Image 1 (cartoon, helix red, strand yellow):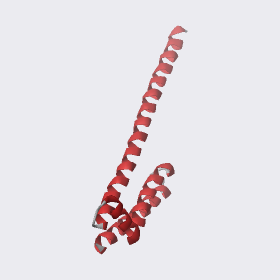
Image 2 (cartoon, one colour):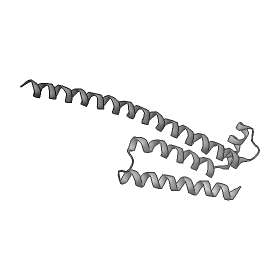
Image 3 (cartoon, helix red, strand yellow):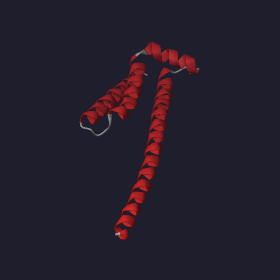
Image 4 (tube, rainbow, N blue to C red):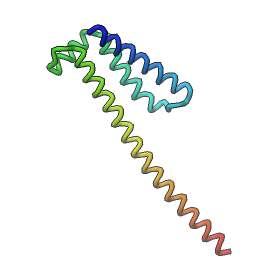
Length: 116
């Protein structure tokens, strides 16, 4: 049990460090880093606090605390991935609309140029 909790603690700290470094180097935007930092902090808190982990295991009806932590990690990252899927879909729609506007502008420019 201790080994799994230690691994989860190290992974959470590593994720926090990676996200902060990526923000510093402008590889990821700040508004997107908040989701990753939040997920890493939640996992860090649960991996460091045995009482929180026991409470979560009891709440989920599990007898083994680290299994609750693994389930929590899966759920947290599933929510983060869903959030990014929504953002990517929105960006794709905006990109399509922008492409259509550029095509319309090009059409009007050609019409003006050919009319002279």
